[in-house]
Image 1 (tube, protein in one colour):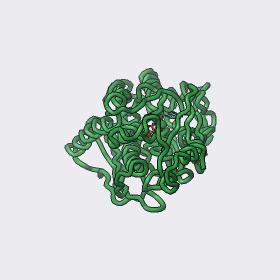
Image 2 (cartoon, rainbow, N blue to C red; image 1 turned 180 degrees about the vertical axis):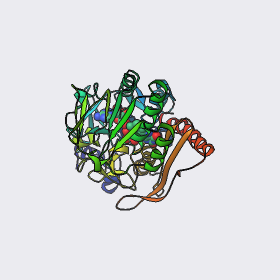
Image 3 (spheres, protein in one colour; image 1 turned 180 degrees about the horizontal axis):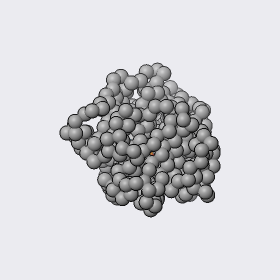
Image 4 (tube, rainbow, N blue to C red; image 1 turned 45 degrees about the vertical axis):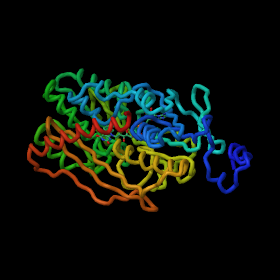
Amino acid sequence: MTLNRRAFIGTGAAAATVLSAPMLGAQGKPRVVVVGGGAGGATAARYAAKDSDGAIDVTLVEPTRAYYTCFFSNLYIGGFRDLSSIGHSYGTLASDFGVNVVHDWAVGIDRDAKTVSLAGGAVLPYDRLILSPGIDFVDDAVPGWSVAAQNKMPHAYKAGSQTELLKAQIEAMPEGGLYAMVAPPNPYRCPPGPYERVSMVAHLLKEINPTAKILIADPKAKFSKMALFQEGWQKHYGGMIDWIGPDFGGGNVSVNPDEMNLDIDGVVENVDVCNVIPAQKAGRICEMAGITEGNWAPVVPATMQSRMDENIHVLGDSTNQGDMPKSGYSANSQAKVAVMAIRGALTGSRVFPAKFSNTCWSLINTDDGVKVGASYQATDEKIAKVDGFISQTGEDSALRKATYEESLGWYAGITEDMFG
Ligand SMILES: Cc1cc2nc3c(=O)[nH]c(=O)nc-3n(C[C@H](O)[C@H](O)[C@H](O)COP(=O)(O)OP(=O)(O)OC[C@H]3O[C@@H](n4cnc5c(N)ncnc54)[C@H](O)[C@@H]3O)c2cc1C
């Protein structure tokens, strides 16, 4: 039992009630702290504040003042969006929903005291903590690469300056130059993301540098929407893209950022741009909290509670939850389930069975959009897929255009759902 709980018991309330009751904040409200203001965390902060009608004190901890979505960042590379269109601020969460937005890093979690320490020195107490810190990269996943080399060989798998850098490097490629991508092993953020990126890089190069080539070294024999991408690459960018899967050494790669080359199974290629997307793991604060098992944080599907601490809920890419892909849509969906469970625990509001959904759209070329999606339910073991759908090869151009337009509506709607 924690010190704070003992102090609360000291108020004289009946012990049985006290044990399940929240610790009350300064204004007599239960406290929820959310770490990470991305797809999962911003949604959670907004819903916790909005749906509780101010009955819960919500603090969001996020170091950046502008969040650039990874979703649609490939479209920025392809020239379909400008960067400002994928940037979002936290002003509305503060002004319209009363979220206490703190721009800082969470650097420690004391699970016994139920506090979060920030880099700036503040200590935030919580009744429930929500962690949605996204991904970090597995050390030495690609020999020769580390974050110290990310300016020479960008990952652009956290959006913002990395995405701008990658696009600038592609635009500066010499005529007929080579762009290489080192694709990540499963599981990783946004399964179709690397392949949508290749499509968007090809689209850009076809316009500005049509004799340039694209090489993908991939440790996976199969990837998301593979048939759809391969059909699209053949149709729009014939001869430009060379995909090297594990049968041809695509899983045996090292890089040399100083020499700007990569070694694929003993064959060294000089490259003009090298986009290294390393293997991934839960955002580091999850490790620091001691709630990871292997690379990810296991959760109870019905509530998104950590399997190691019932007072902590984990969302989005950091989780090991089952069948859902690591996507912004998934994180948004999981946030609503977690908040419903938290409100139930802290305010006694009604809790309905958890339901989740996800769709991932990808753009292959102008007006050539494809999608894959599913709905999910919580079982004891995992978030389990109930039914799904996927675009088909050979679809007519009107359907592909409609699919792309659907994705525009989705982006506008979901970012409003996250940031207000
Ligand atoms: C190229 C690309 C394309 C994508 N396309 C799509 C798509 O079309 N559709 C889709 O649904 N998804 C897409 N995704 C995936 C999507 O971006 C992620 O799945 C989603 O952002 C995960 O949400 P999250 O909340 O887990 O993490 P994030 O959105 O990354 O948010 C994590 C936040 O936590 C903060 N943080 C980290 N550590 C700390 C700390 N210690 N203290 C405080 N704050 C911290 C970070 O600053 C960050 O803002 C794409 C991803 C990529 C890379």
